[in-house]
Length: 568
Image 1: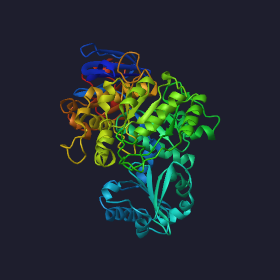
Image 2: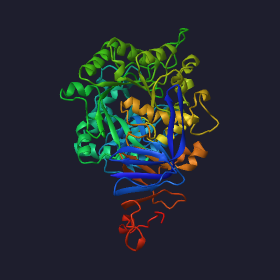
Image 3: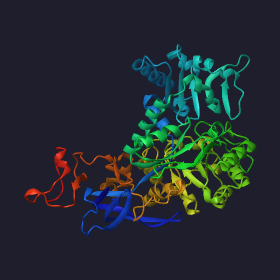
Image 4: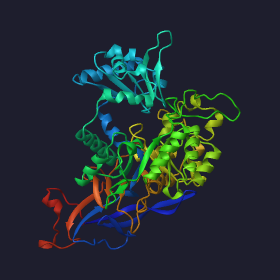
């Protein structure tokens, strides 16, 4: 199969070292044969396709980027949230309760009610079981905070999960004050695991449906590959979807490290077409900054840290044990670390376990660092897996959570690149939108969602080339897929087609839509028929420019009852 793209401005890299990232859009003709780029010629070159059966895209007025990679996302959870009550716009406890009430009216048959998106900073305080009981007391209700590290349940949910008796490590069950302490309804970090039996386990068909919903959303927003962390044993689901040829993106699946202990047969693998791969596992190091559970070290001057509730999920010994087990089983490592205390624990454990630099361990989030931690990341060849969209979300509470000295090394994407740290961009969806275009916008402008004049650490803004690099070259490096991230001969045929007007005003990235998405030479998103000025035209031909009867062309568009835009 052959795909030919003409008359578009195609991104070409000039330099791709983290310390020197440059490139530009250049008029080019690109051909992809059997999933591989076979030529990238000047636009003036003769436009003929190699194969008799060719698909030609006329990209006049469009720009083409390499395929975009989300290096940290939760696809299944992203798909699942379409069935949750959305609490992200609630700015008071009353609005919170009204949103829940409205959801119950719309879905009266739900046996368990779930939601996501609340933020105690917006609400004025943490919601409680009593708040939820006022709306619904007859069936379990569980509502995740926006970060998915904290949740709140009603009283019946707390009783069902036996919250009052939990005594595990790496989490917190919030209790009312003595003399009669009872669960407030708020569970933090690993304590949230006790709610899972109440929510109910999912069948393989349910997992499949949620994963497909999430993948379709990702593809529609311009992603050609996702490094997804799934928490409910989804390897068989993804294998089946690949076998059925239903994966719209490449998938680099990252199971939880705990699955290694449950499944002795779990081993790294990749399909022959490189569409599906499992080669790393995920470990949690700490919580989230917004929830107050990120592990922040005391300031050097001995002053009291602001983030008092932060906690390490595992002891040093347990972290090292999990890393050693992953290494023994042949897996790479991705470890969640938001606070500097967590990053320090993780980097020390990687060093102690002698993790090979060539395996490119991934430190996910890297929101609060220090000079010594950056040096150690470089020494260990640790990838910074960053989420640019955390900046506009977190800037509302960074000053409340972090001292001024901690803020110096917080959300420092530009600094990391200048220091030579390889970085990859991700969304952490459903925490943030899975749109890589929004991610690039946030990396470039770092603006508040409510006030464009409110910019957090403007010195850390990235250029467009640097922002694109995060989601292409950086993502390819993090996933150890050297054929991704570039539009060049011999590379994989993954690319994204966008409106050329973006090149004149990158602020439009925030609201831009995708015209086309190509994975391994196959068009996965086709918005070419939209009635818009300069919309790309796509035509399937039997033979490029082969005369048909009467001197015209034989075009499959005609057979499908569509107008053919091929120049005659």
